[in-house]
Image 1 (spheres, rainbow, N blue to C red):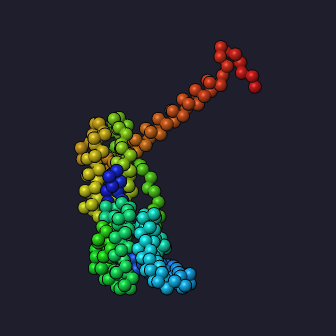
Image 2: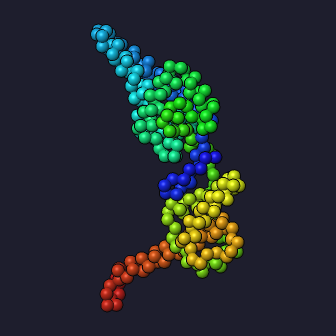
Image 3: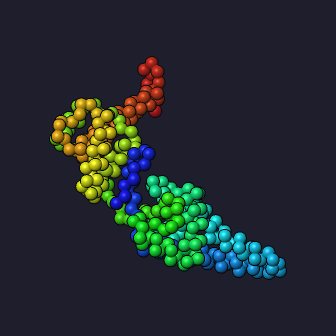
Length: 269
């Protein structure tokens, strides 16, 4: 499991896909592009048959467009999802977890001419089998890799206040957490049970150190980091809900007053 922390502090669970998934997606893409190239070449030859000199130039241009231009454009506009990748449920992302840009897509497509088209995918397959993240040569040069974006849907785990921290949380000054930090804590608590023990302790400690800045006084000594994080989120949720309820009630009262006639004049139905 490859954890990536974005600039907003959001934890992303990016899992490199298997070689089999990448191979299936690549085969689908090659078939689609091959059919498109064949049809375009047949059409170009039929149109330019009267001018043999232009026919050769048009054929080379079409090959370049289909093998480099189309994959570059598709991956850039779809943020790393071609037809084959959409079918197998994967996406190409940068090494930092961000979406691919034009430069990365162009490098992948240009390298693919050799490792996918000219060698029938042999170079890409060998490189993917031996690379830890299943990268092909184009991924190594572009700084990208394939991650799975479709899998089993996880049910949201309800956020519960730890009973032994309820009294402390109700009396503590718990400031509103930044949105990125609050989301990172929520995702960590939801995935804590699936993490490696060492990663679970490390991430829990790091998030606790960040959240402690927004809480006074701190919880009793010896409080488990995950209990502390759950208590803070639960308390902020309850306080925000109560504040929103009071705001809605005040708006209803003001709306009722605005519709009444002044000076005690009775309303006419």
